[in-house]
Amino acid sequence: MESVRGDRHSEVFLDAQWLGREIRPLFTGQTTVPDAFCLWGSRVLVRASCLFRLRRQEDDRRQDVRVLRRLVLTFPPHNLNDWEPILAVANTPDERARSAQHISEGVPEYLLLRRLVVEEGDARQLLEHPKPWRVEARKELRVSRDLEEKPLPFFARHQNLYFDKNGPMEELGLQIFLTFAHWGFAKEPTNADLQAIVTYICAVCDREEERFRPAAEQAASYLFTNWVMPQRASDFRAYVRRVAFDHNSREVKKRKQSPEQGELENERSSRGKERTGRQIVGATEALSVRALASRAGVHHQRIDEAIKAGKLRAKWQRGRRLIERLDAERFLKDTEVTRAVRATRKTLIKAGKAKEAETFRKRIYRLKKSRASDESILEAVREAYKKTNIPRMTKLPSK
Image 1 (cartoon, helix red, strand yellow):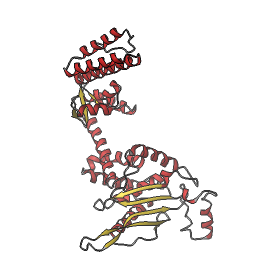
Image 2 (cartoon, helix red, strand yellow):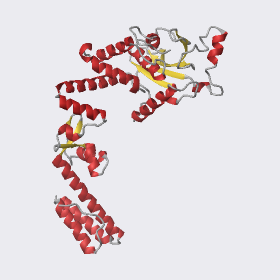
Image 3 (cartoon, one colour):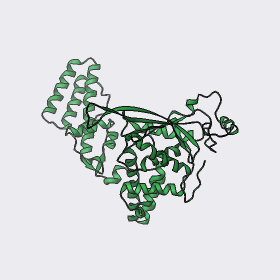
C-alpha cells in the first residue's frame, strides 16, 4: 500500500507506532510475548519469537527472574507494489490462491522473509569498522525495493533495532517506521508522518520547532535514506542530533554570508567539494595530520606517534590536530634525511661494504647524539659515498 500525502497518518506509520508501544512492555515483564502481532492497517500478520535470559532480583539474591533479551519479528513474503493480503490473513480461498501466486516457485522461503530483531540496550558485539557495512546495507536495501518474489540480499532480510527504556516513547515506533520505509512498505510518507518525525527531532535537539524546522526536515530526509545498522540504543538520537545540528550550522552560516560568498559555497557543495585544512585555518598556517602524512608519504599513524612522543608539536582546533607550517616543514626535512641515511647504509651493505656500513652507522649515531644539524648528517652521507666510490642511487634532500 503506497501512502498518499495528506493531513492524516499513513496506515504503515500507525502500525509501526502501535507495534512499538506493544513491544516496550515485553522487556519489562509486564506482559507475555504473543505468538504473533497483527498489523490490521497493513493487513500483515507478523510471527514473533524470543530469547530470554536470567536476571537476579534486587530484593532476593537467591531467586532469578526470566526476562526478555531479544525479540525476533518475522514478516512473511508479500508484494511490495499493491500489498495483496498474505496467506495468514487472507479470508477466502480465492484470496489465498491469489496471494500464493506472489511466492516464486523453487525459491526457499527463508530468502523471501524479512526479520526485525529488537533488543534493549546495546548490541552484545560491536562492529569495529561499521561504515563499510552500512554502505553495503544501504545499497542492498535500495536494490531490494524493486525485487518482487525474488531472493532478497542478506542486509535486506535482517534488520536490528535497539531502544532505551528511559528514551522517548515514540522513538522505537519511529525506528520501526523507518525500517518499513527501507523495506519499501511506505513508498511516500504523509505530511502528518513527516511532522511527527520533525517534532521528535526538535525535541531531541531541544530547539524551538519554528526556528529549527528547516534543519529538522533535512535530517528527516537523511533518516529515510542513510540511517541503517544501529549498534546502540543511543545511536538513533546521536545520528539525529549530528545531522540536524550540522544542517542548522550551515543555514546559520549562509545567513551571515554575503550573497557572493553564499553563491560560492552552494557551488562548491553542488560539486561535492569539501573544505581543506588551508581553507579552515588559513592558507599558510597549519596542516592536518592526514595532509602532512600525505606529503611525507607515510601512514597517518606515524604522525600521531611523533606527536605523542613530543617530536612534533600540534594543536587541537575544530575537532582535529593541526601542525604549524614551520613544524611541518621541519618534520618533512627530518623524514627525508632519515630516508637518505637508511638508503645509504643499505647501499653499502648491498655492495659488500659491511665494515664501512657499520662505521657509517656509528658516525650517524654520534651525530644525532650530539644534536648535529641535518646538514652535518647529509655531509656524512656524501663522504660515505665518496670514500667507497659507490654511485649514489638516491637523490639527497636539498639544503
